Image 1: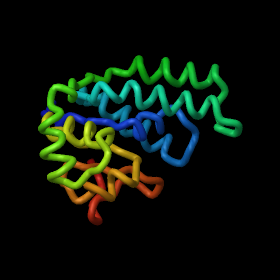
Image 2 (image 1 turned 180 degrees about the horizontal axis):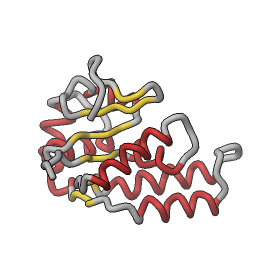
Image 3 (image 1 turned 60 degrees about the vertical axis):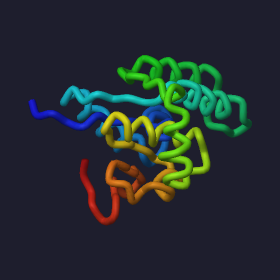
Length: 157
């Protein structure tokens, strides 16, 4: 089996696995392929808090689309995924210098995903247009949107 680059997933990508929407089938296809090729899948430790927070907010909002039982099932599913968690907190100054200052990323939460991908020589998979806009020109960023995966006119993994 050929060696493949690790995949670093952000919360938007993971949530697309469990929430209804236009990206669900596409994201699940990527996930299925990664498992089949035994690709390493990773995220910063803050990913656990990010997905927990998002599901909690959706379950507590009127019209949020999830009841508490659905949110609990979704969180249970996500936390069971074979995601290796990266200790990005130990690299806070590198995150500040290389990502927040160097790449002009204002959010430490977003910077955690970017630094995790950079330090692991991984592709960063996101469904978040804000991250894609900030660093989408970086060769390691993979932005997934309903019409497919695109980065500067290219598609594919």
